[in-house]
Amino acid sequence: MSKDSTLGLNPESLARLLGIALYSDSGEGKDDSAHTTAQLLKARLAGTLPLDTTVVEELPAILGQLRKDLMPLGGRTLGEVVTDSKSDLGAIKKIRRYAKKMASRKRTEADRAVAVAIYYAAIANALVFHDVKVTTHSYESLEASFAKLINKPWMSAELNRLYIRALKLCQ
Image (tube, rainbow, N blue to C red; front, top):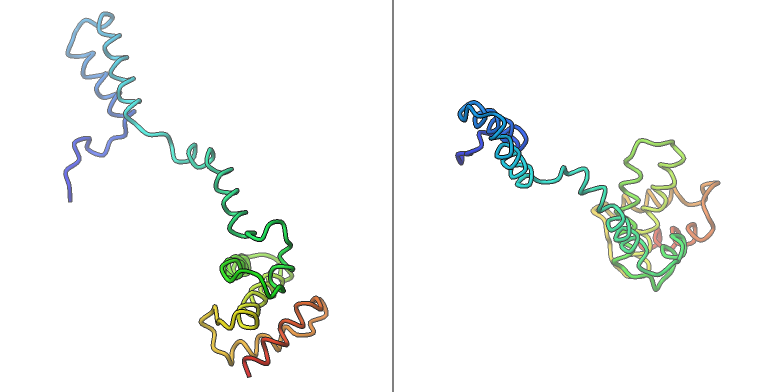
């Protein structure tokens, strides 16, 4: 464990402590106020911005990067990307991770069902169009999941076709 010369105090506390010590040691009070202010300024300038300020200022860049990561195929819909044979495998993997996160969040059952459908659509795309399994689920588990999703009353025809093709590959 390294020794900390600041005793764990933040810059503001150090400046205040220094100011008290300088003021009480000098006995001059008013003449020393400029020195105390200078020390306080020095201590504050030596500190860092609060993390919250930095994060808030960086949000536009973070969101812009997230948009690039999720939609590298330029303005195409999520449905178009997961059902297209020419979609980049990297984009498919990102969509799978995104959908997995969305499915794990506490939301309505409908939100969860949609996220699960997108998750398995990304897995199906990788199996059908790239001949790659992008999950640790077994083929038996995938077969059962695709079978459950096929012909759900709310499922799109495009996803049904994709699930059917993936199901056949898992058998």
